[in-house]
Image (cartoon, rainbow, N blue to C red):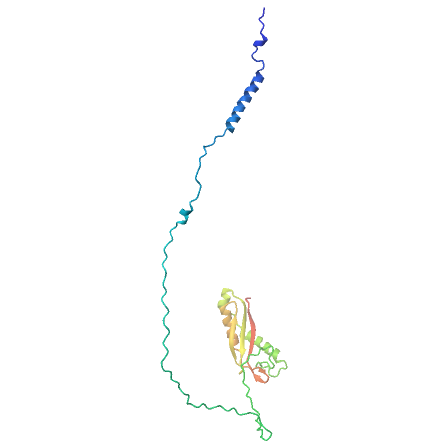
Length: 234
């Protein structure tokens, strides 16, 4: 025969209930342990303030600075002398400049004002009487003849500098000069790409002949003139 177990001897019976009860008890003790508070014993302290001790303070000693008294005012002179003004002052008499009908009026002769000649430069483009190049005296358009003769003079005296040819230098030189009041050439200035070309342009202009000076209002004046000279290698 197989032995049979007694149902009362079953240890697993109600095990889940016991587990829940045990877990509850453990959690309860844990909660109480965390929430447990302790307090120190209460002691009575004397928080009253002694006013007498606070008012009893030492006041620092201060030294009083004594300022010196102001100096006494200067003594007044004992005797005051009064000086009498004995000098007589002559009064200036201003004579009247008004004339009466009985006085004769002297006529003043006309004053001749001498005109001062001003050294003024008048540009070639606006001058009344242009400078006359030799050979243009009988031409009607002396301005056009002047330009034509200048170009002819440059072409006749033109010479390309050898050193400029060897260096391959070319370009345009702007020449500015002034036809003086006596018809001579002066104040020659050049501006170009090379010093040798500028020197040659100055030589050509220096060979210009003496001209009849330009006139403005019938008076000889200085006339500035400018012309370009082209240097071009063939």
